[in-house]
Image (cartoon, rainbow, N blue to C red; front, side):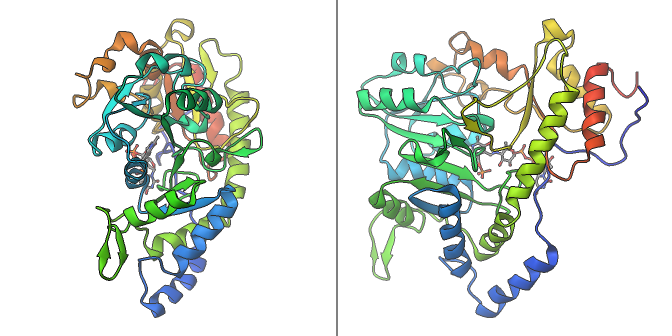
Length: 379
Ligand code: T4K
């Protein structure tokens, strides 16, 4: 193999940037209006356009996905215990903790890597108020089974859909499942607003409560009717969102091509599998994830990660370690590794490879070659 260390790093992702000229041209409106936040015109336009794009009944913009999730939990008045997955970004569980709720970790399905519905009921107690699933990498949770369980036990359902912008299950928008779904619009996400997020729901009263909670609980100039927080998106972020929304479909198409190149480049390597969404799902194209089975491949995920890094190819181990292994959670009874067998195995196998539209076809070729070679740049 004749590849030397790359001069510039290849990151796991890069944000989709709209034309600078377009953004700055539109920025003039914000400048002259002197209206920078608090439900300004860009905010209103983006909320309307995203509601249509995501095909949902109600949508509320936020300053980031974590605040949005924290507010979703408040909005549904959850308390006690919530059953969730340890295979996610810290924000998922932290949002529960910031609401004074005890997270109850449930193992994941070994194929979809989402919360395993067959293990949820065994974790329900008189204190359980909800199920918080994560559509991890945009792979949808087992939404029907989860709905059945929630209905049987009178539980609410929240989905952390941080990775699932634009995903569909059987032609139904991903945001139409559960009581509330959260989306993240961080720069690392397919669609972004530089920082931002959203909550979507079908219940109009819930939308009103969410909007009050994200604006300090302010009803009008003289009435504050609940203990809200500041979760508002500013006008510059909303404008970024409007510009990115116009080009996001092209980015998704390019990523679909890159995925195909990865599939070809990594085909027939024993022990290396490319993670796929279910057949009835439209892929959000958020991440390009592989699993490395050390016994079959003859090399661990960590070694492969280090090899890529030696070439300046910066893959990421999303999500290792498990949230249940963090010092703030590892004392919980449900955090014990022997109760989370699939999560533990998978967290040691997954690797997110560079995946964003600007990558060249030849970049994918290099990445696949480095993986196949099982060698570092220095060998
Ligand atoms: N739930 C789930 C399941 C999530 O994955 C996340 C966030 C949340 C909830 C919370 O949503 P937010 O509150 O963030 O809206 C990144 C992101 O910061 C985080 O949003 C994301 N998940 C997580 C999976 O990835 P880091 O710490 O790995 O990011 P960082 O700074 O190492 O960035 C990764 C790479 O992206 C960089 O190496 C280069 C590139 N990058 C990053 C930024 C910020 C850029 O090119 N430009 C940029 O501006 O967490």
